[in-house]
Image 1 (tube, rainbow, N blue to C red):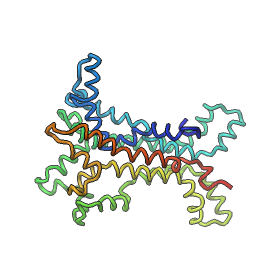
Image 2 (image 1 turned 180 degrees about the vertical axis):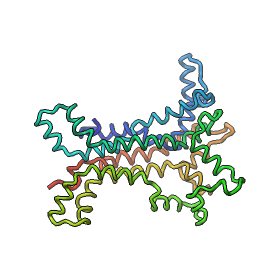
Image 3 (image 1 turned 120 degrees about the vertical axis):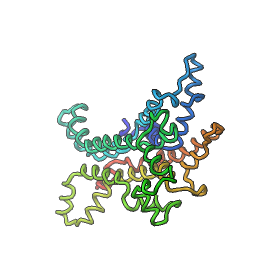
Image 4 (image 1 turned 90 degrees about the horizontal axis):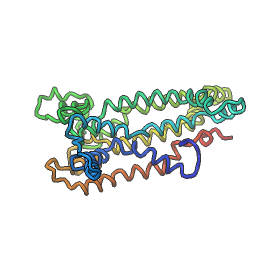
Length: 328
């Protein structure tokens, strides 16, 4: 349904993808904490209904499921990849199948599913890895508690490697951090630039490989027969066809950088250099004197640019093959 051109589809795609736009951000972690703390919104609703309140974040039985609910809430996280993959399946295949009498179910299993199978496998692997690397929600909401019930790998690495700064330097041997320290670029934005410039985000390489595998080799062969060289094939055929994938990569890069809390926590120490995510987290007081109304308003403002960006730019990274250089 999201792949079809119809009135209002842009708004529908934005609503469907909203949880994924917000899910990994510090703003949503703060909102989740406000909702599920002992005097939070959820318990207030339970009181209104005459139901006993629950210590969602203080009871080991409920803390981990509460965090898992936040992860499940990001149900649209793979939508952009699937949409871009669907746009690479030639419409001529569907038209030929209709002429041959294939119904919608037959077309799905014979054309759509094989065409996007590399992306399906890729999304399964990446979602599994992302679940194992969770840090922001566990650290901001519960800090690994209660009774280590949410003490995930990311929280353990931070506590053991970066928090106890008075421990011997050998404990702090994490290659990327020590390299940036040796180059004297800590407490600056250079670590973020260098990580992006020197391929510290292999996700995009793997993602683009899956899209390239879906491009028919016959296009390359036809161009080569017509006298087009390797560079010409790259510029005139591959890059136009990869436009949806490249825009998807750009969107993910922006979202991850904008919502990045872990790297900001490690590399930035000066208040004037705080990123949005780090500044929002530092406004929360551990002594229960936090102005939650202000925090919630700030969280809403933090997520607003992401919504606007996705709504305005979605048509560029999910446009079809018909507008990516094959016409004419």
